[in-house]
Structure formats: structure tokens, C-alpha cells
Amino acid sequence: MKLQKIKIDKVLGFRGNWTIKVGVFDENNNLASILIPSGKSKGKFEVKNLNPDEALLKSEEISNFLKNLDLQDQETLDNKLIEFDKTKNFENLGGNVALGISLACAKLVSINLNIPFYKYLNFLQTGDYNSFNYQAPRILFNIAEGGVHAENNLEFQEHLISFKNQTIFSQIENLKEFNNSFLNILKKENKNLIFGDEGGWAGNYQNEETLINTLFDLKNNLKIDLDLGLDIASSSISNFEPKMFLKRYLKLFERFKLFYFEDPFPEEGFENFYQDFYAQIGNQDLIIGDDLISTNPELVKEISDKKMINGVIIKPDQVGTISKTLKTIELAKENNWKIIVSHRSQETLDNYLADLAIGIGADFVKFGTFYQGERLAKYNRLIEIESELS
Ligand code: PGA
Ligand code: ZN
Image 1 (cartoon, rainbow, N blue to C red):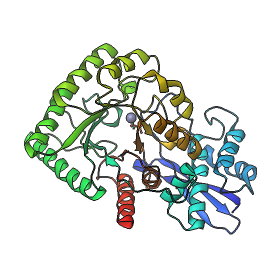
Image 2: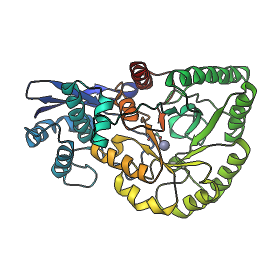
Image 3: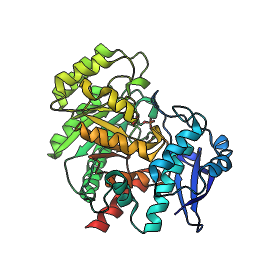
């Protein structure tokens, strides 16, 4: 199987914004394509994307550079992308172009070998075609949005709910029920039913604490075993005051038993705050790095021993190749960190993230709510895989 040609097209993504579709052809003219998402609350350490018009101009040159390479040698392909680019963060080729090529090559191999994409991704990680084991990830459902993903008064970007280990099917049933009950409360409170970028409710609320209290009371009233969490996305909060926020987190943890805090502090210059927070709750709770790690294996290595986090967000578009993504996952697993495979706020209809989550045995997925097609694409793929395997 040899790479023959790369084709890059402009396609519509989130809310009608242009993004790119990257297609890879082999010598028999077989094709696999990938659509690339992007983020709004981006981390400083993420690779750089090209705008779609610039990206289109790259296709011929990169096509010639990679022509005839073995599609099954993923590491070499990914290293060639880095060699072509010559910068640390894909400033020339574009992280979006690089990831499209990297993933489309892997997908094309899985199509040619006639195995599901998640199984091939599992093989790329383990080197063993028989090592795949199905484990349903827990869904982190973004029930209410704030920060830069919503035009309301809430500071925290994502208010997350998650049921304990169950099948994907039953988690979805339970999430729908809880979400409907929550919306009924909002209706009774005469709140506007408006929604944010990822389909979570995004109206105004008195304040964060009152909103979390409402979710906490609902959970108790319904007598269900549900965990509450937050993606603070602290780098996007203006006038972020770390001392005050640390106090607030500890209070929220005590009062509402929050089990998950993502990006509680910005990614640069807050090591001490991370360590302080970790020392106080790290043995009972999840402290997750998103912007802090940006799916970059070098950053995992840098902070491994620092007792700052115990889980990591995986977004392949933050780092630009599947090899680097898998390396980050491998190192995170060595540290016994939880793995959360996550969409971006500005998604596409592609569903490869569901295959990645299942393939690498993610502990959690974060794909938004059930109100928008680009999120449903991932949930439906999870459902499809679970049905196939049961
Ligand atoms: P983004 O946000 O996709 O806008 O970066 C998602 C997140 O912070 O988890
Ligand atoms: Zn995040």
C-alpha cells in the first residue's frame, strides 16, 4: 500500500465556517478522507492551523514529498510531515493539514485491510492485532456552557455530568432523562432556553455556585448516581485570580462533591497552584490537563513527576499527528493518568474521535450534548461500535 496522492478541499464545518477535508489516495485509487475541527479556547502550546485557502495551496507540494511512502509505516509518514514542515508547531504545513494526512493514511490502511478503524488505531498503539478489548468510556456531558462558548454570565466553560460505568446505550438514556429534568427546572424558573457552542444550555444564571447547586439538588431528588465536574478553561477567563479560584474550587469540591476539574489554572506560570490543588484533592479527585498538555508527549514528560494532574485531554488536532497523539496516550497511561478523548468546540461531521476513544480504551469521552449534528456523529459512532461488539 503506497501513498499516491493527497487532495485537500474546503468544506463546511461548525456553524457554516470553512474547514478542510483531507483525502489520501493509494496506488489503486482507493480513498480515505478526514475532516478537521478547531478550538475557540485554544492552548498556547497547540500547533498552528492554516486557514483553509492557504491549506489548499499545500496539497501538490506535500503530495509530491510523500508520494510512494508505505501507508502502513505510520511513524515514518508522520516524521516526514514534521521534516517537511521544519518548525516545532507546524507553522508551514499547518497542523490541520498534517493531522488530516496522518489520520487519512491510517484510515485508508484500515479500509484496505477491511478492519474497523478503532481496531487499526488499537494496533498502531499496541503493535498487536489481537490486543483489542472493548470497554465503554464514560461520557462527560456538557449540560451547561459558559466562558467563550456562550454569551451569558457564567465564567466556567463547561458544567459536566457523568454516569458511572455503564454501556453507552444506558448512559445516553440516563443523560437524556437528567438533561430533560434540568431543562424543565429552567422553564419553571422562566429562563431562556438558549444553547452554547457544544449544545449545552447557555442562558444566564444567578452565579456558578447556584447553578451547580441546582444540578446537585436535581441529582439528589432523582436519587441517581451521577458525578458533577467542570472544565474551567481558566486561560480564557479575564482577570483570573488564582488564589481566589483555588479557594472556590475547594469549596465546590466539599459542598457538591465535584469529581473532575479541567484546566483549573492557565497553562503557563501556575505550577505551584496546580501542585497545591493536587496535594489537597489529587488522591480523591480528577485534575485534568487540557491546554496544559495540548496532547503533546514532550509536555507529558516535562510534568510527569510534578504531581500537578492525574488525567489528560486528548485532542489530536492540538498536536498534528496520530503518532504523537498515541505517544501522549502511552506516556499518560504509564503515569496512571485518566484519558479523556475530546472534540473541539468547532467540530465537523467526522466521527474518527469515537474510533480513537474506543481503540485506545479511553476512560472518558467529551463530545458535547445531543442537540447538534457534529456531536451526534460521534455519539452515533459510539453506538454503532457498541452494537457491533455486543
Ligand atoms: P475548545 O474548547 O475546543 O474551544 O478549545 C474545548 C475545551 O476547552 O475542552
Ligand atoms: Zn478544556
